[in-house]
Amino acid sequence: MTAERQKSLPDLAAWVDSRQSQGLYFLTREEALRSLRQSDSAFKQAAARHTSCQEKEHP
Image 1 (cartoon, rainbow, N blue to C red):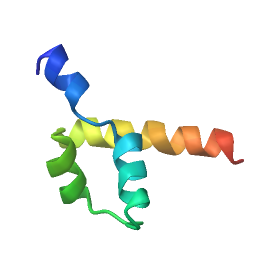
Image 2: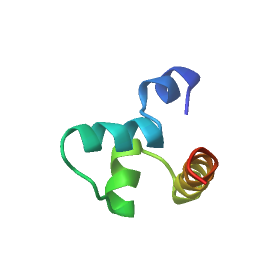
Image 3: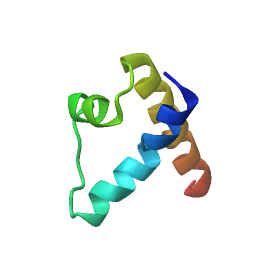
């Protein structure tokens, strides 16, 4: 994937924020993978980072 295309895709946190602003507070892995155009491995890593950041902010 080119760097330019990568910049145009939302990251997991931005995508979750976008869904929440629409009143959507749940997601499926398949929906996230399709919307974010990430591999399963990349999604797992992003989810782990997101969860880790959330735990540091709200211990």
